[in-house]
Image (cartoon, rainbow, N blue to C red; front, side):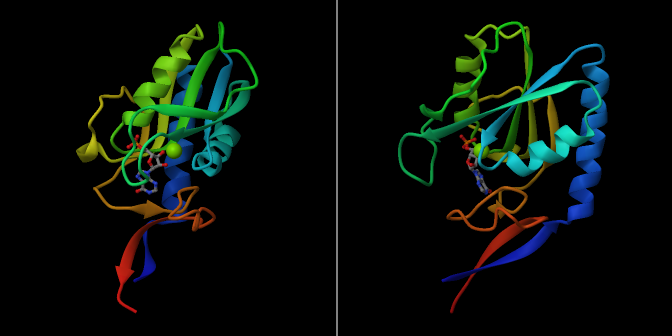
Amino acid sequence: MKEKVRIFLPEHEVNDRIAEIAKKISEDFAGKEVHLICILKGSVFFMCELAKRITVPVTMDFMSVSSYGNDTKSSGVVKIVKDLDEPLEGKDVLVVEDIIDSGRTLSYLIEILKQRNPASLRLCTLLDKPDRRVKQVDVDYTCFNIPDEFVVGYGLDYAQKYRNLPFVGIVEFVEE
Ligand code: IMP
Ligand code: MG
């Protein structure tokens, strides 16, 4: 089987929507600083585009997590592969995620981050597949709700490939 990628959300649509969400975040955090947490690696492209468009002061940190268990289904028990450099105590934190699928990874991660006593903790995602949710997660900012399809591009990968595509595409498998 070989895979093909079909454009689902073109670059200009993604960028326009990120600009809208960044405006909303800037309004909601007016008079404050926002501390962005990028969940590596998928969220890198989204976080950069978002951060550039936020007009309140921004600081950022990076975290890498992996889910225990098999590759196709996240177990919900998260291993911190790279932890944050800075404490969260007293900060207004915004977690930036690429996609929420079952919600297992994020519901676990949010609990870990809450224990670090941020002043506030919100969540922003580029993509959400609400039909797939197993664990409830409160998402404050969603750019796009999408159907249950496997997507790549704009940071998202299939076997570590396609992260650099400037659009969000759906992976289709074709007979060779
Ligand atoms: P969850 O714990 O099931 O919500 O897992 C979410 C994680 O699975 C995301 O952060 C992605 O790394 C990965 N993931 C889920 N759906 C997709 C997809 O359609 N394309 C690429 N990665 C995905
Ligand atoms: Mg992710």
